[in-house]
Image 1 (tube, helix red, strand yellow):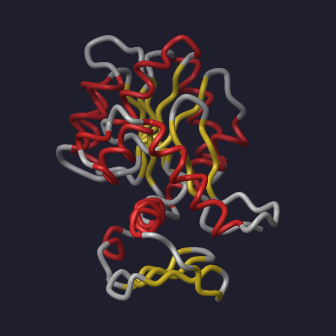
Image 2: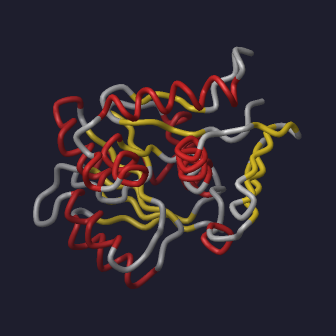
Image 3: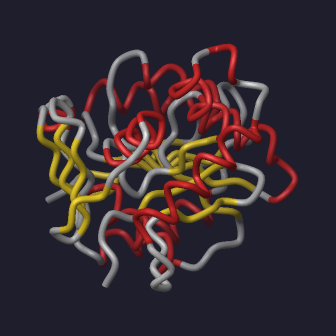
Length: 227
């Protein structure tokens, strides 16, 4: 049974999440703020963390920073609409996904399932990465999509590989720019827009498929399999 830690200072939110998650077959641990949440992470080693951002004692951004120093456990952050700056900061610091309050439980449960089935860390650095419709050979710099070889530029290859290593995870513009172009590229968002557009043309081929989903004002999310 997968263990999920819920960190939120609103009792009604915690009760709702606990009931819904338990009815979906998860073990649930509750914490009222970041300090309690961090203690529960160290004590129970949850498989996934759901945390609010605005909390007393230690907020969700500080909790994300602290958790990332000790574990790669997936983190889903919850935020209200007026905390976009903190939300993006949390994603930059290593959070994996976010939902804006109010949210629907079916959507949250779908996000939970997506994070729990992400590529295991042990597979991330393999020279041949198979994820969804994609097979990426990092030694040969070869990519196949649904069994067909696709020719990418070096930057397009780097971007796809970065996406493939973090499927279903929201990657912010800042994280992607730094990963592809280094610190000097962080303030050049137009580089990323052009690169994403070029990659989309090659892997989606105008067939109505959307492997790369835009998250407005935040970044991108990669869906490796399209049903």
